[in-house]
Length: 349
Figure 1 (tube, rainbow, N blue to C red):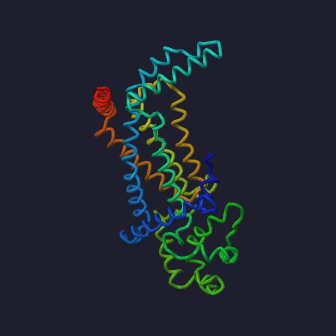
Figure 2: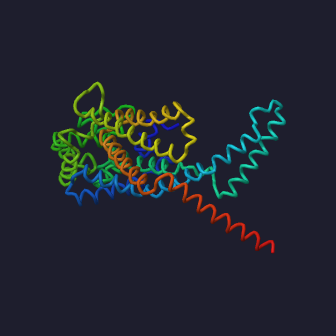
Figure 3: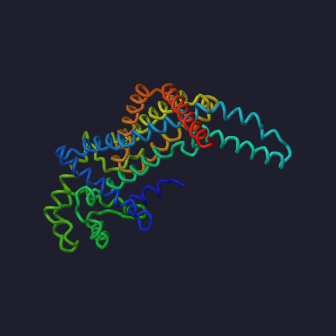
């Protein structure tokens, strides 16, 4: 089950299969470092551009998903006709029901083969890519000293983390170890002299050059005077609480738009009623809660990602409207079916 612990574990670069995320952290870190250089160390401008680029990568996959949904919508009446023909649920005898279900499934498979449609292709792809990208973003936000600033922090700090935490007054209890680099960023200006004084004891991590890089980076993580390495908490108050609120609003806007477009593509969704709208509300509430458990920079990424998603949906709806997708699928399916029929006829001759 996907939980908050899963996210923090992935960000922690744990051993085993979770270590597969580390190359992604490295890649995203290099991208962010390049963007920071291009935008004169303006972290949030770099993050906005990075988000736009990642969404652009996902755009063809989202478009393909819409076309798959259009194909499903087009053959839905035929599927319903087959289901009505066998009416499996009305059969009382278990054996007869099983036989009827097998015949129905076989006929539906023949329909899918004729139409060139794979129902398993309904599209978890975009969601999976988004989750992978999210893992990469969370990784570079948790570990910017290592992956963005390219300071070999992790290989050395593992042996010195307790000493570093003690020097800066950081309580690295259960679940808090992941926040050590963020804590350093938030207090580097105050603790830099102390850390440099103990540099030799800490494996040379806090040389003067490294401390200058860390301090410069920490200043870029403030927007409108808010330290985005901090975690928004309802109890803490302050302007930072606007991050989860905006996460909720933008995620809700994106979900509503996506649902309305899907209803145009697949009219059968109208029959789901309140269940569909409840499911639509779950993800915005989920992301809003997560944004109160993670550094505000993660919430900022979600806000930008949601806004870019809304823009993508508007563009897609304008230039690739659902009805146009359905019409295109009908034409392409007719051409493919006729080509298959000609091939079969030639083989028989």
